[in-house]
Image 1 (tube, one colour):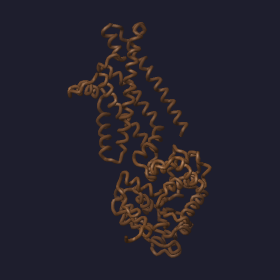
Image 2 (cartoon, chains in turn cyan, brown):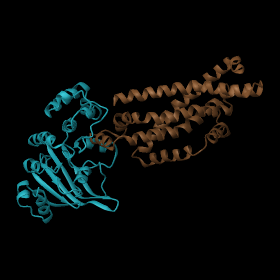
Image 3 (cartoon, each protein chain N blue to C red):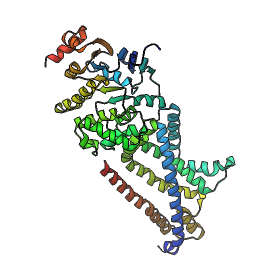
Image 4 (tube, rainbow over the protein chains, first blue to last red):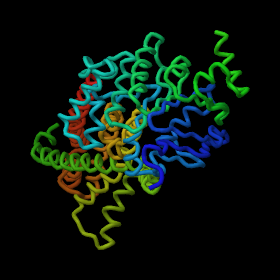
Length: 251
Length: 216
């Protein structure tokens, strides 16, 4: 017995390469996320941060490098991959709630079909989670009847219902109206405080500063800098991070 | 219209026989066509190739050629069945290619994020299709699928021409050739009985479409 499970990093990406035709979106990216850690990935548009997030549960295949979740290399396809994805929660920019199912059904689908939980148990847990993210009273509605902020909170509940080991957030507030951003960020901050392991791709610098254990700054498909949030925002060491932050501050 | 009215029982028998062909071909082509569409969107390259190849070959072959192959080609391989079975099988095989493409268009019309979210919570390919993608695809698929199936009803007349016997087209041939009845009223009668299938089918389609639209 070498390292115990608790010491072993939960997510390890090494030298991840992703190409879209001639364009290299990721040029050999390394990323390590420990248990209970909140890693916020920021960077300019087109820097590859969303792509990196999507490779971690293989919604995006990779052209090079390795990715391990909880010590297991990502399976290529099929049931093995599905089983692993069940342990990795994902929240999308465009919510992607199942449009033909009610809020409650959205949250229970995974537990019933993947975890084989009895429906009654799954529903009870789903209602608890919906209450926790503040949309308990909307359980019987269809997603289209909810505001963007409400939909995104349902999406978080849907991911939580699988009891994931790690949660991936791919720009979760980028499609929201300004007044709805905070209600989603509040839920995410609460999760972080409860010890959820999180990888968050975002443009919300306030959230990064408040909730992150580490900030990963990406530019041109590479990790340009990794730092603790306070150090990163007050004294970024890389030239590209300095440029990026100075542009944000002019507004 | 005397030739029609005097032979109403014959026409009615032909109508029932034709309806049988149509219902079998509908069921068969829906099952085979859906299976082919699933093949075409599957992550397995071999299945995709099978689906694509099937559509490319069958959709681009004239129906009469497909029916000739079934009615006279397959019996040459010592496989024996009635013309009725071969006729229905030929119609199923031919129509399935179009059903496949109609369903595939519906699958492609479902936002890609829906399938991504399904996969992200750990649903398998089959579960993603049956739980998330197909129920939403059905809504957009009804009108094009209706076109395909109404075309199938009319194509069933061609099946009749291959000697199935007893159905509407054979009734017409018998009346005009063997009994020398005037052609125009007889064929108008056949057309009327086909409308008896296609018009209600069209109405049923419109209602289905309406019901699914409300559920959206």
